[in-house]
Image (cartoon, rainbow, N blue to C red; front, side, top):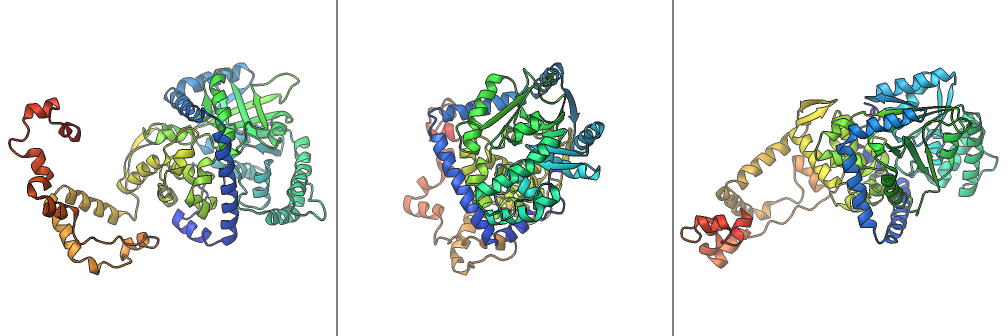
Length: 519
């Protein structure tokens, strides 16, 4: 699986560096706050937004429950429309399939659009090793590629760059890839966009092979859908003679009627628009219209493993809108590169570790790249409970357990570096199971409260780097209750098990009021 970038350090190490970059912080702060404010306004226009959100989640869940059926239906529909379907179990197979298909055309250059799945599998690098040049055509992706950079945002991959930086990249690098930037190029958005348009127009007109992703795939008709804002997708999808689309298996939706729900949810959540400027759909091939050959590569690469996890499977609802990134305080300060994956932000913190099966130190650190504030869940258009999945993955990191890896149930060991945490949790569990020990510990802590340091030593140091140690009260709640209310009312044990207060029959039938609910 080629999900995380090679050589990336764990999130805390990468974030420690990125949070010191003041220019990056300024770029991110301005961009994310602007996008999320516009999104809030666009969503507020719809009185039925909550119902749409619920419908989107339910459609996705129903599709995932019957994913095998809808994928087979999709394959039959694409084949009937003149396309060819290929199945890729992992990144290696997907890269081999695409490379073979491009080589069969005799071409050595391709143009690309909607590239997140291809970034996940490292397709550009695989094509380069085969002597094939792949050109990104989305404006932000072009900036990233020309700058030998990596995307840092799902919707705006070059969000970490400002206009001055983009101008310098265009002036220095465009000529190496094709048409150079105009002389005297300024940093005005209009001039930068025009320079990119002229540069890319040559690529579109000369390319014989296009490679795309897909936002959605409609099973009943075999239709693929790409939504975008610049028109580059329309060029990539219609001008080449051969079109190869690489899409994750979770992108399938059953019907056109289901698609309509997502075409309302996605634009408002991503670009804060009422509808997408360009929505391109295609089903197979048609003589005299568009590419003569169409190939669909259906990518698993860990997705069926995620499907086997009852908590984690909701991750596969994601429609890549990026709303969770724009509200996340951790992403806003750390930036996308700290996540070490094509999928940054809150969704990346749960998607990347699951696709990778917790194989690296970076994977084990990503579930902790969150404050668990819940803002990501509130804005998610398909109601993915990201905090719930984060806590679920943290448990897997610390405790290990049985997971599905490449279709096989496997027992994974706890990640390194969490022995102290496991010991502390076991001690806490034992203490809470023994009220006398808990009470003794509370009284001891109260007596020694003046000795508690403002910064904790050892493993606790990381916690107190950004937090104050809570003040220990002079008296525990248990002791205060016993002192002020007396032992007859103060002991929960006495109230629940004291002789003569409640008969067993009363307890069973619920006549004892609150006791039945508590039990």
